[in-house]
Length: 144
Image (cartoon, rainbow, N blue to C red):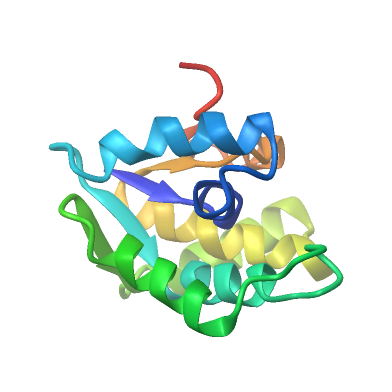
């Protein structure tokens, strides 16, 4: 199982923004209809909508309707599985925050890492900072 980070989803949503975005989109598209489960969480989907519609992030931000439609299509793709935290999630978050002395904007990374660890999933991300959360397996779509 693969769990998607928001950066991967954003690149897939806006593939014409950059060469990296195009490569990520090309990597993700066949996987969304493949055999391996692609886990997506509601906080990641909400972050896609938040960032894609933000005028300080994009010169031409998406409309809320378009961003929501993309998030919905991602969550309903044939290989997609909408996931929510289970009973072990919070204890894992607590452990990661404590062990790594996380603060501020690093805490959401621990939340996502905890979800991947709880699911036994590999996290698909372009953020190299997830490497600190061993035994989490973080993979980048740019290495294929």
